[in-house]
Image (cartoon, rainbow, N blue to C red; front, side, top):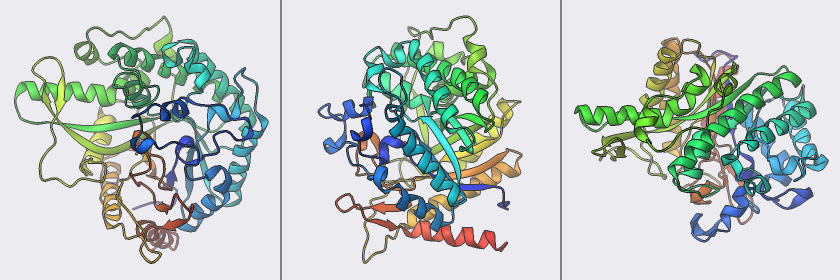
Length: 438
Ligand code: FCB
């Protein structure tokens, strides 16, 4: 059922693994700043060392290759490759050139994300994503990098999960830059999406490789059959899914947003929606869990955790059917749905090596059941081209710090020792069998 051209990969992101935050002229990003805010990140954790991937990248690529994966999804740190005045930082660019060459040598495909949440701090100082100009700075960065790396990248991604950058970063304040205003979230989202459209055109002018966007999506179910709760689930669906997907694929924001946030309005100018809905070559989908929601009694919703369901170390519900349901929904909602990659899926558990082995049975079951859900969606006609586990390595899980372990490979943060977990060994056996045609 998994054709040889269906890609299996693993994903990471720059700030979560690289460390070496002051090396080779890298400038601070909003996450460096946010980690210094007391109470913002669990245990006061930060990205200064992380998985030390900036220095150990060769070992990490070898792990990918040893597991037998086909592809690697990673992100570029904007503050490494450009100086504050917009000049190229050759050393930073060379790091990614070496990484891409290392992937090529191992026959691995490269999925490069331009923006996985780590905005250069100097742009935040000028308003960040609340400033329309940041969208143009992003396109400039995309232009420079795609000129430099043209011919080496298999697939480009503009933004990872604009929902999280906009909403968690600007409305709930849970992520950098830590702002808390519903209007900010809506404004930031518009500028992020505008940046996506502009960057897509910039990359396309320089390189033939496909360009797309990665969105996180959530299955929403109503807590009861009442009309209010069903409406609450629709509002949650707009918030969690179509806030990004409708502008991208239909060129308009969903009407529900005005009901959810009557005081907030996207700063749309003439021509913006056409830029945002510039043809995208593929859509990346990140899926983790389902939310069960109830009406808040007005025009919003509240999440209501279901009792007795399986959960992960994050407290997220394990709900594989949600992935299938969403993929089928998207196929029905968007007539021109482009090919899809599942660009992230996975779970955290409190893994510890014992005698050189990490037994992570829950993760193995999680992968199996979610892959079965992808298969069902494909049988229903959804064009899925690949699946990336989140993550290759245990890493810096944003506001949760290092406690939550999502890796296929365990990282000991004292010694930087890597231990391949049982789930990765099972994946390896599966990929070997697939290669043999078994
Ligand atoms: C996604 C992020 C990724 C990681 C996983 C668990 O929202 O893209 O960086 O944090 O969740």
